Each structure stands twice: as C-alpha cells, then as structure tokens.
Length: 293
Image 1 (cartoon, rainbow, N blue to C red):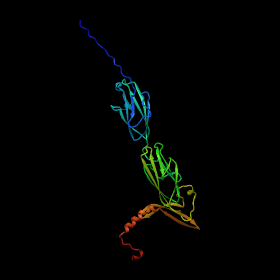
Image 2: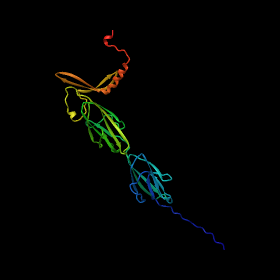
Image 3: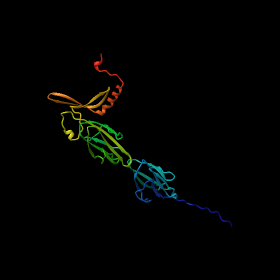
Image 4: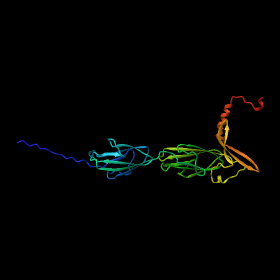
C-alpha cells in the first residue's frame, strides 16, 4: 500500500540579536577592551579632520548598523568627520526583526591643529588694533616708552601645546614685560598647536623714539601704558616724494610764554620713499636756486 502524501510546515523565527561583536577606530585604541555589553567607548588624541570607524557583527544575526543615522558599508566601515575637541557618535544596531535595537556611544577627541591666538594685548592690556587670528604681522606704531607688556590669549575651544614670547615659554593669558631699544623692535610670539607639530608665528613691530627735549618720565611710562593722543600730542602726516605717510607724532609744549612744536618721525616708515626719490635723481642734472636765471 503506497504511503500517503504528507505536508510539512516550517516556522522561522527572526533573529533578535542586537549586539556588536567588536568596534575599532583605525589607527587608534579604545580606552578599554571591547565587550558587547559595554556601550560607551572613547578614543583620545586623534590627529586630522576624519577617522575611519569599523563595526563588527555576527553574520548569522543579519543585523544592520548606523553611525549617526548613516549606514556603514558592507564591511562595517564608516568614515566620520571630526571637529576640534570631543566628538560623540551614536552607533545603532538593529536586529533582523527590525524592532530590537541597541545603541553604543563612541567619543573621539581630536587634537587642535590650528596654531592661532584668540587675542594679543599690548601695553596696558588693550587688544592690538585690527587684530585677526589669521593675520600674523602687526605694526604697533611708535612710542617713547622704554618697555611694554605683551599678553597672548588662546581660544578655550582650540587648546595649544605652548606659547613663547621672544623665546620665553608662557601660559595662555600670562604677560611678558619687554625692554625696548631705541629704533625698531620686533617681538615674536611662537604658537604650537595641541597636536605638537603645527606652529605659527606672530610678529609685532614697534618703534621707540626719543622723548621731546625737556620732557620727563611720566606716570604713563611707569605704568607701562602707551602714549595717547592728548591735546599736546597728535599724529602727523609726512609727505615724502609726493606721497603721504602717517609716519610721526607732533608734540606742542609751552615755556616762558612761547610755544614750540616737536615732530617725531618714524625713520622706517619713510626711508623707502627717500631711497626711491634718490634713485629717481640718478643721472639727472640738478640746479640750485642760484643757477636759475
């Protein structure tokens, strides 16, 4: 007697495993050994604006992985962008059933690679005029002071490894008093970013001139403050070879009922124009007033 037909039914259950099998950041170590039950990890001292993250899952669990809502590739890799400082990424694992999920947190600290200062202050603590972190050279003008104070301030969001003012290491916000020689002085501020390799140099130029004859030390010099434009001292324009240059200051003093005017001119501001004028005169025949008929 032939066997009767038989129908078999199979019931498949969806996998509900939502664990990661492993987690890696290319080129860097996690702060602790990975364990599927541990859901938060941190990586420190990353250099660069991107890093590659790889997630591992058991192939038999048929789960999907998103990093900040972006799918990883078929091998579990995802390149993520980094801001300076701490970056936080959410890694979401969804089981095959589409319902069961588990979230992991990955923190990545990127080192600052920008060698810039938030501010530079001179003399009495005033920020230098027209300061821009990306501009590295400044002309502070002229002064009769024999010393000045410089203060360099870092960004809180962009930590630095070091600041040097004329070769002396200082912390952010610390001040350095600098003696000024007669004539042009150059002050250099060397900035090293947090990554230890990116370096920037700010250059400040200030010209010290002699005080007008008969003047004495004032409280402004004792307090290391810059000269200000008072009623008896003002900026003057010097015309050299037909070109105007803001190259000096004028001081008006009075003694025995007579007024005198003293003009201090910054040599470096006009010497190029003088040289140019002399070059133009080469090869020409010049006449004094007495030669003219």
